[in-house]
Image (cartoon, rainbow, N blue to C red; front, side, top):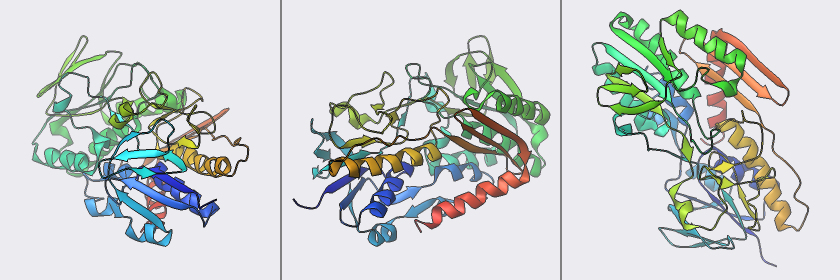
Length: 377
């Protein structure tokens, strides 16, 4: 038998963690990364772009050295399809054969809300953080609106934490610039208790912090549309000079050209071992997967890393003909940063912890970023 060839699709958190875990477990397998660019975009750091604490070059890391050190072949392309047995990945730069596959190509934002083009989607990339910075700097005053949505067919497919960070961080920034009194900040949500997956205690702390900072809330109303100068809810119209809105998530478009099993929300179906049912030696990790677990299981980098490590080890077991039994942990760990502090939330099976904002949590978030990125520099 020849050397096993493993392809990983995606250069985000899940994809790179899977590659590291694969190489750690085996020096022999042939690894190929398929992605549009040999770069890691560290999106959690974009919350600090408006304040100048981070710049583009701080958050986009070339992966050439990492790939060379770990003997990983790079196939610069976007995935476009997959053979029915999973052994041939189709891309816009040619087909890539594999003996094992890990799908870590992330998710895409649903754009079904009318007028979504008038909003900035914070986690869409570094350019989104720069757009928020530039538009905020150009404003002399007015109303700023912040909100997030979900996938109606899969409510767990959402990411709201960064919106809380932007609303708190921009409030802090405007205060530092001594122009907070010229702005009205409004957070809106269809839920009466936004951020429920963080736990009841965390929701109370978040809403208390908004009240303390003078951030208005409009809760329990479903967004109807976003205009160039307003957010229109079921009963309320809010004038807005800048709207930040995070839609729900679904699978990337290339999945439509595959026979992979999908969830009701359009994500790749994965089991507790991160296997894609019905397709041998094919695994999924990260935001683009739909997995069994608690209803608070997050779409965040930490959870993607946990899934990717398990997917990598289980794929090697599958290729070796061994039982695939290791399951990933469901774990929420986040710091909701506000430039001058951070609210720490952790959640595991049977335990939820939320700590009121402290400057130490802010420092811890920055230290974690530095440590996380060091392995790829």
